[in-house]
Structures are given as structure tokens and as C-alpha cells.
Length: 126
Image (cartoon, rainbow, N blue to C red):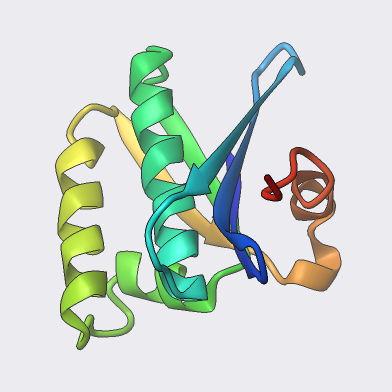
């Protein structure tokens, strides 16, 4: 699973891309309808992607994205000092119980072709 959150003048949104073992691709675009920071948009993308993976019956999940904050907090390398980020981490931890294995992999945006593809799907403008 690859995810990306974004914030622009027309609002915030989230994108998720699943690449299945048979190479099929599933794309999901979400518009965030409340005031959100870029970090919140990234967490929303990650959380919704994990929830979708559960609904799809996926049991082993590799989560890729370019948010250093999200990955360092989920991998317990950074503390969640902001209450909202702590809430997102706790919610994601609840969903982790649905998997046999889940791994969080931070990728640098410059090297992330899947994230580039995500930036091209859907639009958040009304």
C-alpha cells in the first residue's frame, strides 16, 4: 500500500494505492471535509488505507509513504507530543490487530514513483 496526504488551496485530501501480488492496482481518493494540516492529511491517508486493507481481507501489509512524521511515530522512533497525532497513532494501532504482519516503510519522495502516481489520481477541487 502507498499513501499520500495533501493540502492545497481548495482543501485537504488523501490518496491510497494498493499494488496487489498479481500486479493489479486499486486506487482510492478521499476528500477531507474538515480543517486539516498536512500532517493530519497524511495520517488520514494512512488510516483509511489500513481500514481499506482490512475490508479487502489483506493479512500482510507493507505501508509505504513519504511522511517522516507518520513513519517515525508509527515505528516508535519519535514521540507523539501533539494530542491529535497521538490519537491517530492509537487508532492505527487498533487496526494493526487485523493483520498477520504490517510493516511501515518510509520512502523519500524523490525516489517514490508510486507517490508520484498518487499525485496524478483524482482532484480535490469541487
